[in-house]
Image 1 (cartoon, rainbow, N blue to C red):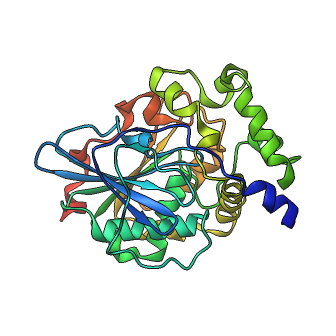
Image 2: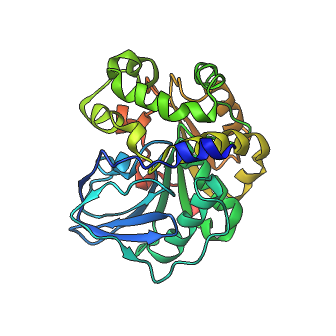
Length: 307
């Protein structure tokens, strides 16, 4: 990448979205992990891994039970979307050798969180979109850590997957130097101009979370690096990574204009029989924001898998 492009791309992007948060936030490398306070005794632990241009608030209303311990990743070079909490250094942090802004880097953040934070043995790791790839990469890096972990992959970036042709068509003519200009253009356009195409039917929570997408990262370089790394990771990662998953669920939307649904389904079908594929009626890439009805209950884990 040209130095002049990098200079343009590292110009900071201001944080534009945050919510009140009660809990602790740990800095881990160039990312963070937040643990939400829960009012009841924790029965389950959920670790949420957000997608490209999203933030950890994607999961906060989906998992709001007082007995759920919710642990939320902030991927590298993304803004931490919290008010009222000062991030602290994680005593258990270990250095990460990968390039920040990549699936590999964020997988290391996930593994450090999983190793050090859950207080229950009933652990679910739930990733949306790029977050699905982060989970699979984390499992590839440290398979034994996931021996008793349930995995939920929602509209996920998968090995041998593809981006939707519509997105590919939009990205192909974009050079690195054009990104800051394009993002300014998108941010100044009314969301109705592109929202319905990519986001499907809106509801209040979707509108709230998806209206500030292009302000989620700390700079434009992270956006470019995320996109290039997603494409490269899908191409070079083969489906053998699935063999390390003990049990879990793929949530496949009925309509997806971000990722190629056919390629996603073909990849998911190569997974072991302990992985369920749920073809949801979700009208967009954002399955659980459309409705939580397709999310498996904690009790639905097969007893054989729990043994």
